[in-house]
Length: 166
Length: 173
Image (cartoon, rainbow over all chains, first blue to last red):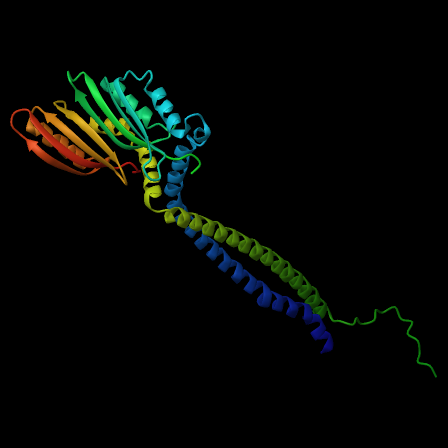
């Protein structure tokens, strides 16, 4: 009897190990995998919310970064903004240019108002260049309207610039 | 008197019978297999928990960032939105979308774009025939690039002139 029990001990221990330890471990691992899948779904959901918000923030920072260095430069950011807009206007084919750069309002560094006349293609191109990422401008209003003999298009743009480093 | 010594060559009976030895061997093999299974499952559980902890930490980090960005209210949020619209709805792009919808005898007299939470488009349109204007309006209303296209004042005598207000759908996929 004693010998039989001794011989059966490893088998009994194996059964105990499998049923008492391995099976519960496997169940816990399976539960952890289910929870992992759920956590991944939650992460993807949050990521889909974050992507557009992140892009907004990136573009806002890019626009602000344009004037980050200019803030300490000659004439400050308003003068830098004026130079930047003038550089965009140069070679754009625009005539009868009127430009105004004013500080503010509120959270913005400056407001730019550009009024010019150009051929239709030049006017469209100019409106695109003023909205380009290199200018740091955020458009507020754009108006395109024929002028005089209709060969010229009047373009009016109002845009703001953000303070550098914000 | 000491017991007689056994000098025979017949093997002495073992401590365990054959069946018992088989049970011992089989049991030992089963134990080793169970121990290996436990080790394997334990490793898998640890890996699954590590992945879970990482995924939870990442999800929480993303949620925190979303809360942080959503928490920024007021003008800063509006400016950020306008920065996106400046990139996604630059005037050449909006004009190109409009040009695709224009019938041959309809022309745009004036185009105004206002960048706020959305891009509001105001058009002054001239058409040789009222039917052409109606066609343009219909195309605008059906276009996925524009929403809420509503006609304003219409002068339908002779060379037709009218205004239209619409919203440009900058982010559509």
